[in-house]
Every structure is written in structure tokens, then in C-alpha cells.
Length: 314
Ligand code: PMM
Image 1: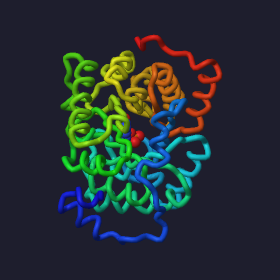
Image 2: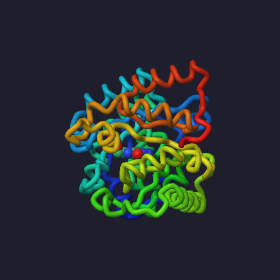
Image 3: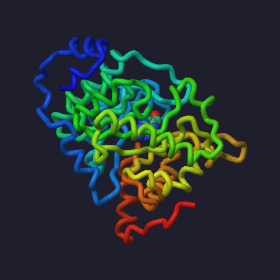
Image 4: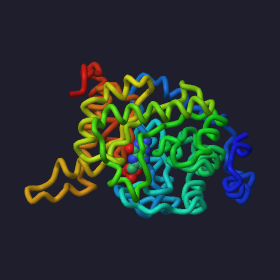
């Protein structure tokens, strides 16, 4: 069903890969992950970047065995799902070819599906999403909210898989120039509503949509903090909200040393955990993090304390 929805170029890519793979596992698209949309706890999505150049963990998991081992570890540490990405979205990054993206993610997805690890595919390309779903991914995490590839909405609609629509204004190479808002909270909400309308018009059921304010994407540090303070307004759009702060530059900037040098990427974990717990307390559906263990532990403390809620993130 998915293949019929794809553009000609996307079909070529799909046909070129082996049509049957002995490791692939039969599944309903979305199976096992759709239930997470109704989870009674904040969902933890573990980040697996199979890229040489992601800003936070680029190069570490480019090797198949290392990637699989890391994902299995994150699952054991309590990740509800693992988010597999094959293209860096770091500010200024150039795009990679679809074939390269596919070659990076598909072997990992097949191995992890065989190991029973629930996954989302972090991509803006319909062809990659379709192939990843065929290979065993259960959810589409699209940092462009469907804007980068007009075929994405049809692919997702035909799949029955949940879809994360992130707020996005343009590709990584142009992101900094697009960080201009009169009222960032209102504009992000309005632009997310547009993405939702397009997804619904394409036939994606509302119950399968998740929104994400896209912290760090065409946003300055101050924009990120304003969105954090007003997460209630993103929630008021009416869908589960994913918050992804992990190791992002605005945390590095917050924790800069006395000379103004940002805190190195690898030393932003405590700040990430703090933002993730605060997002949960503000009502977020889930968080996307690199350090699954620390986040799961911190959320366990929050829940054991009665899961106190921020009345309104200020
Ligand atoms: N950020 C990155 C990648 N994928 N997906 C969603 N839904 N939200 C995000 O904010 C997001 C994302 C970039 O961070 P990384 O390089 O650490 O993966």
C-alpha cells in the first residue's frame, strides 16, 4: 500500500532494495507504538543517530554493530522507543542523498526489528519513511512536519503509523536566517496547526499525530526558553507534545563558562534531564534524549513524588 503512494523517484529507491529480507519481521505499521500515544507515563524516545556528523553524537554509531548495541542498551535502560536517524539536522548541515540515508538506517532498523526494539524513523523523506516502515520502524518522526516532502503525508496516511510533526521553517543550511518571530509562541502554534490541517486533509487520523515545538530549529536560545515557558499553549493545540532538548546548543549557552565558552556537548546531560522532567511536569507526552538512563531515573523520581504538575510553565 505504501509503495503505491510514492513518487516515481521514491519507487525506484524502494525497488532497488531487496524485496524480501529474511530478517524483516511481519507487523502492522504502528503496532506496539500506537499504544504509547495513550501511555500513562511520559514516553522516553532514545536517540540513535546513524550519521557521521550529528552535532551531539555524530560518528559514534555509524558502525552497524555499535548502533545496534547502543539501541539495545537504551531499550534496556527504559527507552519506550528508539529514534533512528540517518541525516544530520545540525544547524548548517548539508543534505545527504536519499540512497545514503537509506543505506545508513535500513540495516539498523532490520536488526532492531528482529530484536524486538520499537523504533521511529527520524526522516523528512517519504521514500525513507516508507522503506523504514517496511523494514520494521513503527512511527515517523519528521522534523519538517511534512513540509520537506509533499509525498510524506500520503505515505504516513497509508501506513497507520503515528507521525511526529515538528515545527520547522526550512532546511538546516538556512535555519539561522529563519529564526525571526514577532511572537514565537503564537507563530509556532499557528504553523503547527497548519501542519496538522494538512496531515488531516491527507487522511492521517488525528489520534496518530504528535506535535513538537522544534527547539533549536530556526530558533534562538531565547525563543527556546519562551516556548519552554509556554508549553501549555503548544499543548492547547490539542495533541500530544514531544519535547526534544537533549544536548542542544541553548543549554550549552546557558551553562557557558566565565569566558562565555559554551558548555561542551557531552557535559549537558544534567541540564537535559532538568528540561525533560520540567517538560513532563508541564504535560508533555514524551521526551527525546540521548541519555536514556538518567532521564528514566529522573522521571521515576518525579512520578514517585506524585508526578507534580507545573500549573503553567512560566
Ligand atoms: N532534534 C534533532 C533531531 N530530531 N526530532 C524531533 N521530533 N524533535 C527534535 O527537536 C529533533 C528531532 C536534532 O538533534 P540530534 O542531532 O541530537 O538528533
